[in-house]
Each structure stands twice: as C-alpha cells, then as structure tokens.
Length: 67
Image (tube, rainbow, N blue to C red; front, side):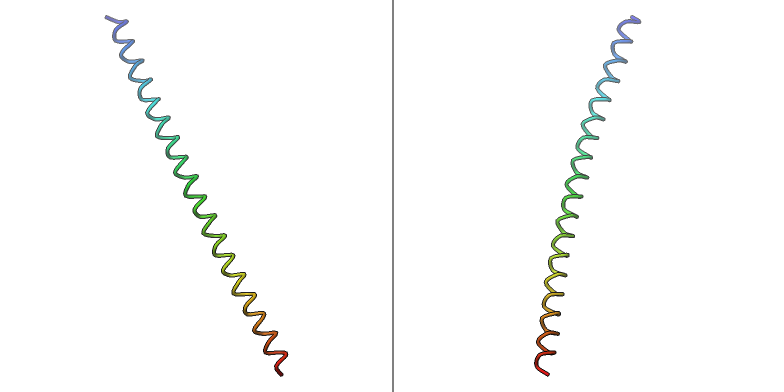
C-alpha cells in the first residue's frame, strides 16, 4: 500500500513538473516573439524617423539655395 501511494505521489509530481515545464517553455517562446515584434516595430519607427529627417534636411538645403 505504501509503495502504491508513493508511486501515485511521484507520478503526480512528475506530471505536474512536465506540465509546468511545457507552460514555461511556451511562455518563454511567447515572450521571445513579443520581443521580436517590439524590435521590428522600433526598427520601422527608426526608419520612418530617418526618412523624415532626411526629407527635412533636403527641404532646408533647398530653401537655403533658393535664397
């Protein structure tokens, strides 16, 4: 009887640890994906800001040469 209870207890612990590991792995994957999305968004924003700065500089050069 003690061995059966021990086996059930160990089995439950093992099943819980396996499920917990799977959830942890999925959580890490989700966080990595969100981080990748944030990096991509930041890169797009930086590209847009650079484009705006170049256009603004071009306009200033154009205005300066027109005078």
